[in-house]
Length: 67
Image (cartoon, rainbow, N blue to C red; front, side):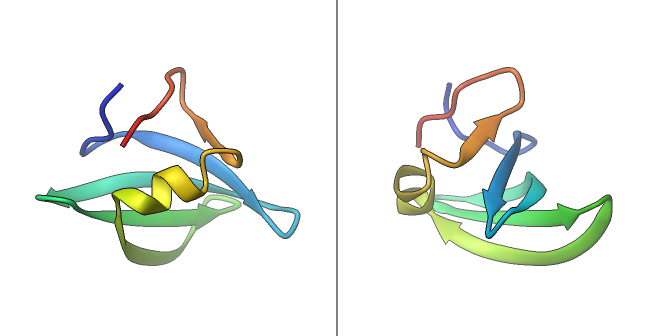
């Protein structure tokens, strides 16, 4: 699966599980919104390397992601 706008995933950091959605894609830059317990936490701009570096802790919603 190609990482693209609208993809959802979960990731656990320091025993906190965040839900995330890719809200915007511009070339190789992805804007990701992170939610914790249903509440918006932050938005981050990330590159393809983010998904490669964190593949062990990213759980794609029903799909596997490849940047």
